[in-house]
Image (cartoon, rainbow, N blue to C red; front, side):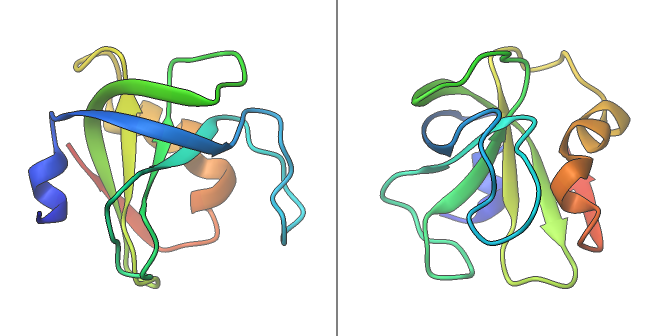
Amino acid sequence: MNIKDYLNQYVKIIVDRPLGSKHPKFDFIYSLNYGYIPGTISGDGQEIDAYIIGEFESLFEFEGYVIAIIYRKNDNEEKLVVCKEKDKYTKEQIYALVEFVERFFDSYIEM
C-alpha cells in the first residue's frame, strides 16, 4: 500500500510512546500519543508511525482516521496523523501539535 493510500482511512494504532513519555534516545517528552500501524512497513524498515491528535490522556491503542501525512525531506520515512474526526484540524494546527518532534526535520504536511 502506498503511503498516500492511507489518507482518510480508518486505522488501528498501537501506542508505544504515550502522552507524557520520554523519548528513549533524545531529551524530549511526547506531548501527544505516538505509535504505529501493526503489520505495515515504512521507509526505515519498521512499522508506519503515527501521531495521534485530539486525545488528552495516555493511550495503549487507538482507532481513528488518517487525516494527514507528514513528509520528511531529510529522513527516509513519513509519519501519519490520526484523529477521531476527519475535518477538525488545519495544516497549521497539526504542525503546531507535532512541532515538538518535527522541528528537527525539514517536513511538510499533506492532507
